[in-house]
Length: 494
Image (cartoon, rainbow, N blue to C red; front, side):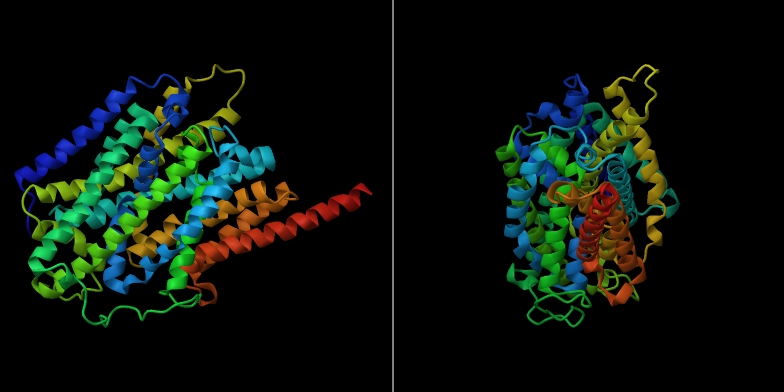
């Protein structure tokens, strides 16, 4: 197996020191909890938009999207046709409601509208979502990416994950949101640059750019289909629906997204943040689709680099990490590995910042004994970052037990609570007759629907329909139960 050279290791270590330097620099500028969590609410919308994009991309997309292209074809990327509609719904329907409320935790909105029980349910959903998300990032980065490029004993993977998390925690806990956003911008350049570099080198190996496009439809790709079909995995309609649902639900209910909108000065700046994030996402999706095509063409031509006894389809998720070692020159391998680490760390830093602020604001602050001296808010959030990181490392040890390829694992684990969480916000913001009891039950039912589809394949529904189905089930349940709740209350009052 090819090994990293001294120059590769120098590049990787230099990258780690750069991240720590950013955290140290901004640690001296954070004076209050407001500075730490929201950057003083004066952040540049372009930088915040790139940060939001980098946060939501992560190593999961960086590896799973090329693997999905290699294994199933371009159907999932056709979902980008939904972006204009997403931008309208998120920018003119959701963001104005969010920006009206100057809150620290997005879930304060739920308590103001519906009550404490709904807020606490949302808090639990968000924490479960982001803990599982960060745990999956650690697992994928270490067990799939790094083990494919570094010849080490798998026994040491928890220690590698711990080191990765520690570096992220240190610069995040020191620098707060300002450090998170600047490092996200740097990391975006690194991991997109690594993808472009890999494509260029493969095109040189193939003698032209056009050579990476297959001349005939590969036999192992799914048959292309239009329209919507809950029983089919790959179609243009399914891809557009899942991307639309995910973006709308994330924009309207995820603390990591809402925290970034609230860090800007007004609605127009928040919309610019969303617009920059969308353009960055479209660029990266196109780049990762091309990267998947390039990897497929490279390994079809150079089958001696495939693992013996396995087809291209069976090892699709690991082909890009392996190419880093066999296809890139010394030094550049280290740069692209830094790109993999960058994609992971940009997401985990945002996750740590948001999760810590939610725990501090929604749980500890609420249930703290009033007779005790309140802790320093800034010190508390920093301490929580270390505790959250430790929990993420433990959870990452169990992600390997989830069946499916990398894309399916992400859908089942990471996106399980995305739609149920938005159900609560939809009821609070857009249903005037919503009640606390009905919304709570609707949220639980939405989780049940997501679990039934993801892990039990109820009715044969494909995993791509997990979020849309759980969203519809939760909203319908909330509307019906709220109406009945109001009806019962009126009859009791008579």
